Amino acid sequence: MLLPIFKLFRNLLLLSLIGLLSCQSTPDNPRHDVHSYAKPAEALMTHLDLTLAVDFKNKQLDGKATLSIDNKTGTNQLHLDARDLTIDKVTLGSAETVTNFKLGEEDDFMGQPLIIDITPETELVNIYYKTSPAAVALQWLTPEQTSGKKHPFLFTQSQAILARTWVPCQDSPGIRFTYNATVKVDTALMAVMSAENGTERNNEGVYHFTMKQPIPAYLLALAVGDIEYRSLGPTSGVYAEPAMLAKAAFEFADTEKMITAAEALYGEYRWEKYDIIVLPPSFPFGGMENPRLTFATPTILAGDRSLVALIAHELAHSWSGNLVTNATWNDFWLNEGFTCYFEHRIMEEIYGEEYAGMLEQLAYQDAMDAVNDIGPTSKDTHLYLNLKGRDPDDGMTGVAYEKGRFFLQMLEDTFGREKWDAFLRDYFDRFAFKSMTSAEFVAHLNKELIKGDKALAEQVNIDAWIYGPGMPDNCPVPQSGEFDRVNAQIDTWLEGTAASALNTDNWTTHHWLHFLRNLPHEISTEQMTDLDNQFHFTKSGNSEIHHAWLMLAVKNSYAPANDAVENFLTSIGRLKFLRPLYQALAETPEGKEKALAIYEVARSGYHPVSYSTIDALLGWQQ
Picture 1 (cartoon, rainbow, N blue to C red):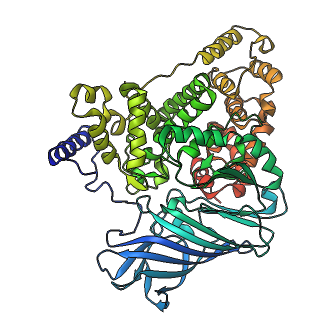
Picture 2: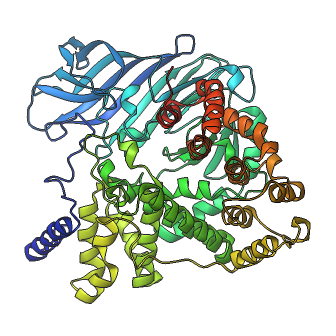
Picture 3: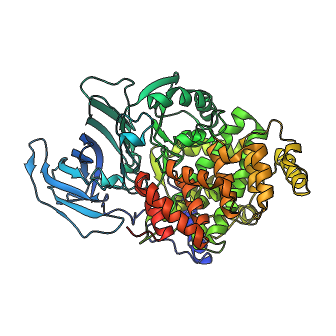
């Protein structure tokens, strides 16, 4: 919607002042994506027809990508993103007229521009290509790395700018396209994508996919393996390896309730189906919000549905991120901060205020840890970032998630839930299937809610949140009566009461996480043993509790947990768990030696997203 000219001028002036005051200059064009070689203002990709043959033996995808383009300016060149792709040939139109192309200078993380000669009349561009066995988006797993141990597995991870390593495309979150795909796999395997999916394996090993809603390239996703499907309700279901399927279906039983709660809050679910696939443990993230098919880590299968906030989070992305998308990776908080807030609202609706309050308190702890780890005065703790010349993964920290969440919580507190919910619902409707910049969001917030009220603007203090460092003074500080009970038990134990005498009846995962996070950093071996003998943390099957305990064990040289640390690091590839454990080990010479020994064994089982981070952390040299 266009603003009246005087309001537009006022908002632009306000944004300029914000940039100056925060010493963070806003780019001349905040929609220009510094992480893409595409020139969408000249020629824009609007649809993708993709044909892939999956070759596990050579760890390669053999593909043909047919791009429908809108040649806006009559240009004679199409600019795409590519990285580690072998381009065999390029043709134009349905007649497949061969044309010239070139790959430009290579950058470490951005890859290369793929520049194709076209004509002003060109509508279709056909690219024949092969991926590299080292393509960063692709993880090729041997049968031994799966739960079934019989068949290999492949999955992709396209966010942030890794789609270009398996599909030549305009790889920017501000560019959307629809797609169709045909994927050929071994007949013993099944393929699924971020699109309309079948629910059964077929005898031909050929799978067809359609994504009718336009998406950015980072939401392109493919998984291939020995998987089966189970329905969770009318609009949802789960895929997993056969040995994991029943456990996953039990864990995600509340998915339909989550969809109902989300729609009641912020409007229609626009993607028709919401399915989940549980990937092997090397998946580097908790979840990835690929539309229609959330990719999920098996580390959330706790057996008691205590970690399903992650599913609420990925579902919420169906609105914040997938529906209204950050225009560039500088604006990443618009995806994740909104989603963390929305996740909280879904969990509150289904499980109650007390339960959600514990999650919010843990999120506040995460927010403070993220800011302190980076440095509270660092520009990397701004919500709006300047990632020019840097890998956008550098900006994917807890700040975007949790500082973003508490910014929106502060806005809810300021305007009241009723008015805030109406604003958000309108936001998702008005900007559906479009992208958003931080500057545009600020202008929209000013227009719709602040409305020129200077006192209200000072109270909200947008500048401090979006363009300033650390956690602002008006950050809400959540309280939890449940955690007050936990704190009392911590105090009792520290005063000398044995762990066996503590009152931990009816504690959930969240109580235990607060307990472990708030113990002193230095604990004696006798104290560690007392806790372990009573609560069996070293053998915990809950990944979150286990990880929190292992962090304490490493920092306090608790020898009985040594084997558990090694087993954990060699069996799980989730970066959230790997990074802090390796970092804690590396704080002493003896620990670093142990970390390197474990890493030498474990590295080959990690996704490139994970091992590239741990390589740098440990100074790994192959």
